[in-house]
Amino acid sequence: MKRSTLIAVTALAVSAATTATLLLTQPQLDPSEPEPVAPAIRVMHVNPGSERMVVHAQGTVSPRTEADLVPEVSGNVLWISPNLVAGGYFEEGEPLLRIDDRDYRYALERATAAVDRAVAENEFATFELQRLREMEARNLISATDVETGMRAERVTEAALADARAALNQAELDLSRTEVLAPFAGLVRGEQVDPGQFVSRGAAIARLYAVDYVEVRLPIADQQLAYLDIPPMQRGELDAANAPEVTLSADFAGQRYKWRGTIVRTEAEIDMRSRMVNAVARVQTTDDALNNPEYVPPPVGLFVEAEIQGRSADNVVIVPRSVIRNGNQVLVVDQDDRLRFRTVSIARIYGDDAYIDGGLQKGERVCLTVLQAVTDGMRVAVIEDETVPTPGVAGS
Image (cartoon, rainbow, N blue to C red; front, top):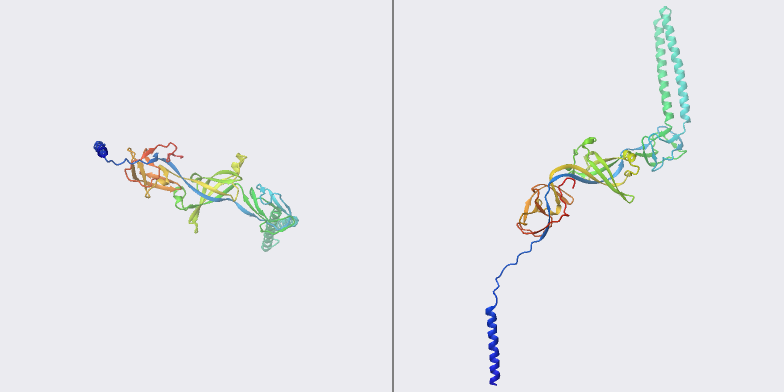
């Protein structure tokens, strides 16, 4: 019993001694705060340059010239051109319709006979006046008889002029029995058939020219400030000052583009949309002659327009998402710390912001959107060569 107690006491003593030794010899740890992890960000290098402003709009292609085909004489339709159908193409001066001309040929014959009769009467009156003047010279008649002869000559001259005017009218009416195309173009619709009686002044078809097409582009008044167009321009713009425009659309399964110019603005503001309509014109005839595969913009096609505006100098383009507090961006200094910078914003359009003041060439602008930012916060910069450098002309 005594031996067991001695063993237990000895074991406890050894354990206590071991524990005390471990406590006295353990290393002392100094408390320290962990170093914060710098967030990784992408940056762009500031490179100011000239930038041409661009304004986008949408509109529908319409013909520049559109008119009703109206006969100037009445009669029965004898012949219709095969091109006088919806979608038919015709050249300027091409016959489109012929009207029965028998009545007008008879009228021409009567007018010709009336001119012959008036000529004969005028010749007789002229001869008679000459005879009366000779008799007056021999004191065979009075001056009153000569005045009567002069009056008769003037009356026959007036009758001859009237007959000749009637002859010209008859010739004109006869020529109008053949209706000619006023310009080269297409037929939008027609309402006439052979044998039908058409009346003078009644529209029988709708035509439009194909030499030019126009597109009305509604533009907000704020966007007009970026175009070299007087806001209340009257008439067409000078060719030298007309902004270029590129029209594009998907048609027949392909993407097409056409180049044109802004030729004028409608000198009024739309009461419903509060926008100003700029008119873009595309010339199609020359392009079609120079390129057989050229496809002109079809009338009625909905197109997107990109209008080239005025050029701005010393501009830097940054993503709109980097703008903070309305007019600030984050700049990375030489120590890789973020600094708030107030800038001058010339324009915010789409996903881009145009900055024309507050940044220097070579500075780094933070492109990464950070939720919590403090001035002087350290960051890890990732140089991404795929990031574009806006602000360079043509970018």
